[in-house]
Image (cartoon, rainbow, N blue to C red; front, side, top):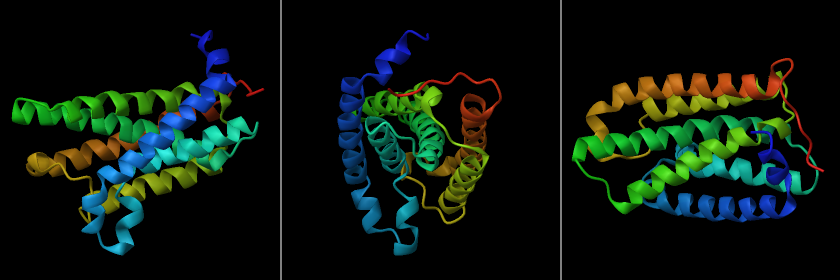
Length: 197
């Protein structure tokens, strides 16, 4: 597996990934457009989960291209990319089972969000965040769950509305797993580290 890291650190690959993530972020905010129009201003920051996750990663990639580390953004990126990447994959699979079919957009969302989750983890050896960065990220992530499932600002999948309590429970534990993975890959003693050169 370690053969992939020199490739990931290559400037051309970083630039390509940066462009892909900028495009995905812009499309993500566009996808949320109609829901954002109906969202009270106080909750606007917490509704477009996936594009905000990829926006964090855009800044991580920019920092790498500058041969820098921005630890708080790295912590936010790894946790939210994995969480919302896996969340969207599971939700679209649920849509398939509830409706008996999935349109091409659903399949595109499964592929793109799975890639989101994977890229956040793949770059873990290059991250340099500490405990306090992860604690701030955990607060952000769990607070977002409260906004989504107490104030019902979650991404709208109307066909899954009757499963909202179960989805909320799943999402909480997905947050915990995502935070745990960030600790495992970045903070634990003896973890594998690399530098962008």
